[in-house]
Length: 398
Image (cartoon, rainbow, N blue to C red; front, top):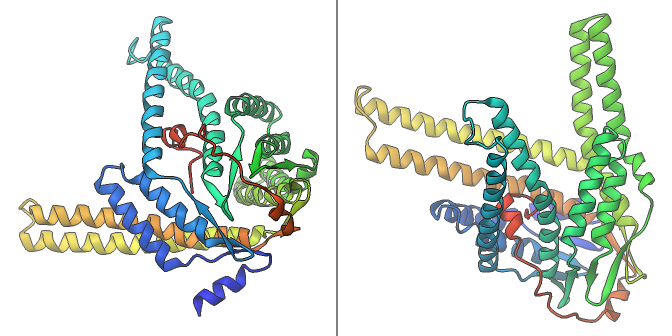
């Protein structure tokens, strides 16, 4: 009954997500616990198994996607990236130390420490952007639909250089050019993506994304009003209005992301004939994220409360003057680990999966018959296994 209700909420287009809460939770919990007891090594296999489940649950006209990535190639890619980044950052530190602003030049000088920290961070920015592109390329290269592979051109450094330029323009314009950044970075990746021998193309205009920014501008306006009131009239009222503006701003960015996704999807084409119609609802996604986050927080509070009470009870029974027994310590550690793993699995089930289901269920692929004329392509052996994305902890999410 719950599964039918879940499916009825997200069944507008010819794309469906048929995953269920129970098997995904079990999979995420088991693989999450294995990740903990292996000191993080199993996380590459964990992410792979979860992706396989999600990909196979996503269907177009009844045909499911297939994820062919492996945990081993992700682990090897991660190790290569770690070695490279360690050498690269080591060279950066040697240069900074030679210039007199390294970590070891004056450990007690906070200014030198901050200069070194930010210099190291900005030195990593190109690799962070490089990793974002490579992660998407890897996921496409390991995705099949009806046996035909997706792919993406090897242009990670071109993306990184353009992204740095767009981020700089957005910062200089105080966010006014965010739609330009969103559009052109997505266009760069879309225009280099393929399904079989057919190329994706991103159409549209970047200025059209300003309509999605309306709530961001409203939030900023309310915050400015709050600041003026706080300065010239009532500080309390100004603070209240400022907080309202800040919340509106956060909601505005969520609204922008959803509507930007819809516009960009609606102006994409595949092979010049296959088009897409996306109609996600920002209010629905915000509701999923807010209610899901509250539910996860409540479950976490109850779980940690019960575990804390049990530990307190064991301490009382043993006597307050005595140290906790080895058994109590082991039970406490395992309990906390299990709760953290369960909360991660619960977040995946109550937030990520419903969002995926909503986005999929409100997506329609037009002229799907055009897919039958698309032919297979060669395996893209140049797509690495998200090593830099995993090493830098970005761009490699489900």
